[in-house]
Length: 299
Ligand SMILES: Cc1cc2nc3c(=O)[nH]c(=O)nc-3n(C[C@H](O)[C@H](O)[C@H](O)COP(=O)(O)OP(=O)(O)OC[C@H]3O[C@@H](n4cnc5c(N)ncnc54)[C@H](O)[C@@H]3O)c2cc1C
Image 1 (cartoon, rainbow, N blue to C red):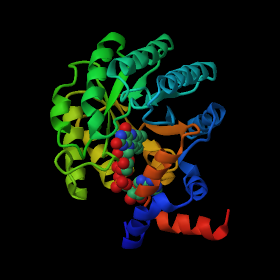
Image 2: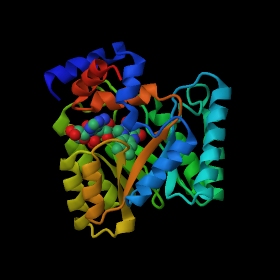
Image 3: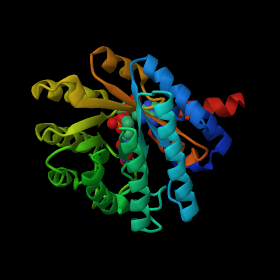
Image 4: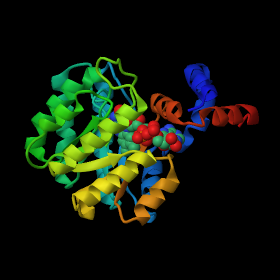
């Protein structure tokens, strides 16, 4: 990322919310479930699967967490009704993790039950390092009960290689990503190449253990390394998948699908789009151009 883009990233919180919303619109399906359904259908027509995420993070009131659970029930009903090729992704802080771990676990339990009723799957996103232990505890407790939960490992975390060792022998499903939160150096690798190297090591470890892995990246270097590992381990199409975020590098998405890989797109929707959009903008190497254009055009 250029120095100017880095400078703009540091001032992003000062950019008016309306401008952020305009520039970040491509990362979000919309505010409603109907809009998410339309995006999933469109992706499906392009050969991509989806994972639907209800936007929202850390809640302090139980009612908000319960409302999020009910929204996920609506999502599963809609996936079934419209026969969509989609599972869901959940964030535990939205489901009350910071209120009470037991309350959050019960909420995840309910979502996993509904997923199970429909033969569907729930991916538990990984948030910042203060949530990692609790997230893995909830995953390890509920996965044996339902068998339809997956977790996320972040390649920037120093603990990731040993967390892989603690996965269940059978039935584990992991999304591997670089990691998006700003973490202290004592828990996270910081160098760009170091994170890439740890990603490749973690991916090889997962594939060697036979773990179904969602290879979540838009980094062409990693997509190339991952394709080589898929070949090395002789994996069939249904033994792994690539994953990408809505609105990011659609050309790479098309290339991976055309090469015969399965690919899933992360489709977030909801009214609470601001924190998610800010994280996406911070990663956009051309953020300055987009923000300046939106400000100058006044649209
Ligand atoms: C499906 C999916 C789920 C994820 N879930 C989690 C999670 O649970 N927890 C977590 O911490 N992180 C999650 N992430 C985010 C991830 O950790 C990275 O922050 C993000 O994917 C960027 O890393 P990268 O591997 O794409 O490499 P990068 O080096 O960051 O990006 C590679 C290239 O992709 C393009 N690009 C990347 N981001 C953008 C953007 N926002 N706008 C425009 N172009 C862009 C650029 O061309 C860039 O050079 C997820 C990512 C994906 C794809």
